[in-house]
Length: 234
Image 1: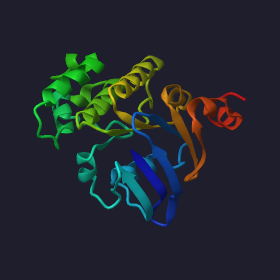
Image 2 (image 1 turned 90 degrees about the horizontal axis):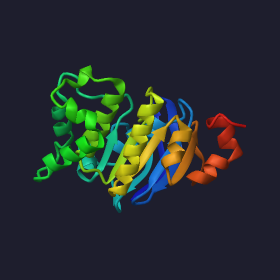
Image 3 (image 1 turned 135 degrees about the vertical axis):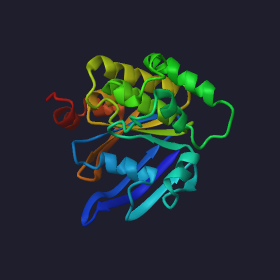
């Protein structure tokens, strides 16, 4: 579904991504783990088209997309739930969800909204409330739900568990598992490596802008280097 080849990106003179290559197959949940500043968010932003690339190729569903505008990538089914939630605070929960479907012209928008409500029942309860008044966990659910309203073929999730309680983290992880069951492919960036590898099929480890390890999630969990650096066990 997604092939990234030798992707490089910089902020001014500082190169952040130094030739990243990875792939995501249809139906997978793939985790990208690494420390702060490793380049995880920059990679997702480059895939979405909001962060300029200096070189490299992005192939999505067999089409080169690195020169396409962000909205054109959204229309092709490449959507992102960004780090920090970034919901539209002055708008209601329902309006936020409807904005997620801004590129759609089909008649199933309300049906998909109801599916988001089924996935995150608290959003149904608060559908008329302003998004800015939601808790952090509820805003995270709304950000993911808004992305799902765009009918993603590949969903990019950036730090979905950041700042959440363990109970809410479990709810978010359960939702990601539900997405996979419904045919949504997911590339998830997480600092919580243990949580990410629990739900992923495969994983990549990125350090200072380079992929340094890849493999099945179960293999990465048992890798001594990963356990020592990211899982808090020696």
